[in-house]
Amino acid sequence: MNRRAFLLLGACATLGVVVGCDSVVEALPGGEFPRGPLEAPDSTTLDPVSHMLNRTTFGARPGDWQRVRALAPDPHEAAQRFAAAQLDPGSVRDLPGFWARSRFDHLEEPLGEHYEYNEKRLLAELVGATVARAAASERQLFEVMVQFWSDHFNIDPTKEDCRWTKAADDRDTIRAHALGDFGDMLRASALSPAMLWYLDGQANRAAAPADKPNENYARELLELHTLGVDGGYTQRDVMEAARCLTGWTAHPLKPFKTGKVEFVPALHDDGEKVVLGRRIEARGGPGDLDQLLDIVKNHPSTARNIARKLCVRFVADEPSGALVAEVAREFLRTAGSIRATLAALLGHQEFLSSRSCKFKLPFHFVVSSLRATGARTDGGEGLVRFLQRMGHTPFHYGTPDGYPQEPHPWLGTMLWRWNFAAALAEDRIKGTRARTDAVAALHGGAEHALGHLFGRRATPDEARAILGSGRPLALALSAPAFQRF
Image (tube, rainbow, N blue to C red):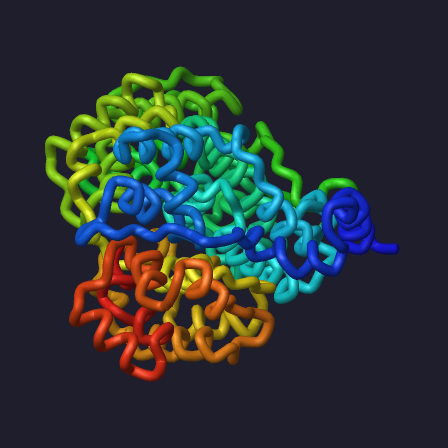
């Protein structure tokens, strides 16, 4: 019996006392389906609960709005209570998320064992697990932040040994720190075998006085991961940072060391360095890395860069300077606490008032469609093909800056969004099945179900056009009200 079969058998044995094992397998990968009748938002504009669900999750599932609204008499307080729980993912029971990831158990194996797998199969599992978790997990804000940091620390898994090491990077760097401490994540990324291979850190060495350090990772560390392109660093800072990083290497396929990272003193430039005006003493050895990271993670430009990116993701494409400054102050005050920084952002008036002004990127659109329709999915080729057509498959972006977050590059995906919506509504995606009729019935009819899909009551024109179209679900998922969040 392999590990996957054992996990499934064990879970069925645990849950079979409640429902039949076949029912468990059928229901849980897409989230446990609620019993009706269900309330749907009935206001003419997005209320605070719908807004919070829109921004901190990949979309509301049937019953989510009603469940969150019941957290407090006041809708603002209910929304904030939901956000507080999401900021503490360990407190959120996540049986659907467990089932989603248990089907991709190879990803949990030690890094060295990943070299035993076909790299295309490993990447397919990584993509499938990402889609399945985003669609099923109760820890939605965590999954949103996993995607955010995956783009921030982007790695192309087709380069050299990244083919086998990116899966471990996703687990040990991104998922381990997505709502934790930015400094811890930054260090984990700097010493990630996948990052060392991707940005040539494993080739950054100073074995002889004439050796010139490789600047690739140092440049992206300053330009993308910390200070930002306008963060005030110079080419001299890049060169000095590269010197600090010499000597770290990742082993390829090698007995007892496959994928391991180690520091080789003979390959390190142990002279004095000056980075951003800060002196790093000679003979620091591996400590040069920690001193460098301490300088850049605590720099005001890093706080502004991270704050602005968070504000763009959660508030608006052009957030105000005042909001960015306040979020940056919280980042600095808490020494890079991601959780505290997000709490400040999600409680800010600008966040609370900026409703339905963001355009869903393709991954967000696809996953929100799955969640809205109570769909079950295996995250396999049938679904991933649509993400490929829209150009937004996880872990398929080739440059270090990650997928673009602004809407303009994605406006050309509208035809494929319609094709996906039609295929989902008509049950034509292999490995994925929406529960369309059940969603409408639970909400008391198709018109009320539009309130669930849009987070507000449909306008008379929207209801008339959608319900009279003959393809109501496909048209509703393609409507501007569902494309924005």
